[in-house]
Image (tube, rainbow, N blue to C red; front, side, top):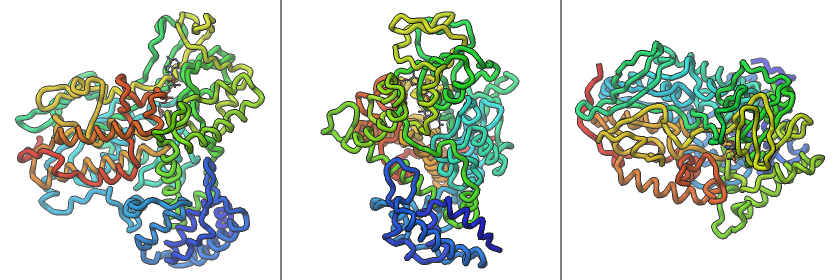
Length: 640
Ligand code: NAP
């Protein structure tokens, strides 16, 4: 290839240098690139600049420039991949901190250093392949997780069908179309590990781009022929005699249809049923009233008096979009969100950065690793509770220091509005709820002349407005709920009746639990993706969890095919012991603090949503099912 030096220079100017240095080890086969003096010194809450100053950054760029000119002019062949020991050093280098023991195999696998990762299914033996072909799987949901299941099932050679209530794929990215909707963890991490998108237009792309990505995956992997749209699952009933799930579908034309499957994979997400607050008079409001996830694009907000209830992740995104358009905006806030400074939140990915992703082998993978480490595993210690700590506004010394830093950042944004300072700095610890990414537009919107932030409790909704505890009536034309979702009501769209005739939701009694978030005793061959206790609070990618869960589920199906069993059911003791550990561990994090209320906790105050360990722990726990954790039952019967 002829090297376009101008393009290369543009690219080097915007490169993530630590990721580029790690890529150079692959390109040259020379680990001496990992120089101590080039190791980044990231500052907390910055974008990932090396922190080494322009001189060292210049040295790195010059060295990379020379090596890349040579590489790009050559035959493109890479030297043998780095050893595990070198990969360990590369991880430390890119993270700018020593990575704890145990991460090397994780990184080798996640980064697919050998060219492949273990998430791709291998049903190599002919007998396993043949038995697997007899299994029919029904996947519920064609969002991020359901599509992923489809990709892996088709790679494994299993018969499967996906049903979705919507007329298109994408799930949450299809349904949430409110103005300003975008991803809140970097797209270079929020994408399937096997399907990187080097063309993301922004670091945190808007919703239409996410929808386009998932549609593209459905097309590329030929999934559409497996999907039935506008089809709702009403009931799943386990037929013990035949060891199949009998599933009743409500079809597009309103009819009902019964289908059978050896296994069901539920991929319906956690955040899909809007939660309207229980406020007196809610139904009496005469004007248009809608939830952020059911945005009424037919309602023209121009010049209107608009009320927004709620200031979570959704409102944080749409309020700045609608504020300049409406006549008057009244935002009703119970608790402010913590906004972590992310200056490039709305920025385009520079062309040079895309060029590097396209042209420099492993640059994309190490950049992804950098994001993974700094936003998840590397961030978790800052939200870990110190049992000896007794200030309700933080959970540890380091959490208090972070709080101080971010509180200053928020206060500085409203320095010209002293009336807002106390209102916009949260009193709960950082990490108690999912933090939002803040580039200043949120508080900029709240400071506008046509915007009022009301922190008085909403006591009543009337036909013409909202009444607050101080007795004031706020007259409005349109009411928008940014009040979140009924998250702890898992799989709320359908009934699942298991082995002994018991319904799953009855069994849960409002307190959903599963083993690894995936499987529940009494419900053989029924698997959940993004189930109980598999959410993360820090700004990591839920795709990581779904990929791990799908590998495990495909592993379960492989176990059925290998063993010739027709059903597998997780043992109650295994499930219970796991949940005891989860509950205990969740108490040790900011989100488990008794001083925080959030959608992570169910009606019993139990954290039913979040994974309380490291991401690596979920990766390890879901590498493959342990046959000893399950009761396996007899021969499978083909489903006609
Ligand atoms: P949310 O985080 O649950 O926020 C709901 C908001 O409504 C909170 O501010 C809550 O206040 C408030 N609220 C609820 N009932 C109220 C009442 N009766 N009176 C006044 N305020 C009330 O919901 P969300 O913003 O839709 O976000 C939910 C989750 O979806 C997020 O945590 C995130 O995981 C995900 N999400 C992601 C993105 C993204 O990636 N881009 C965007 C949006 C959402 P309190 O805080 O006091 O409870």
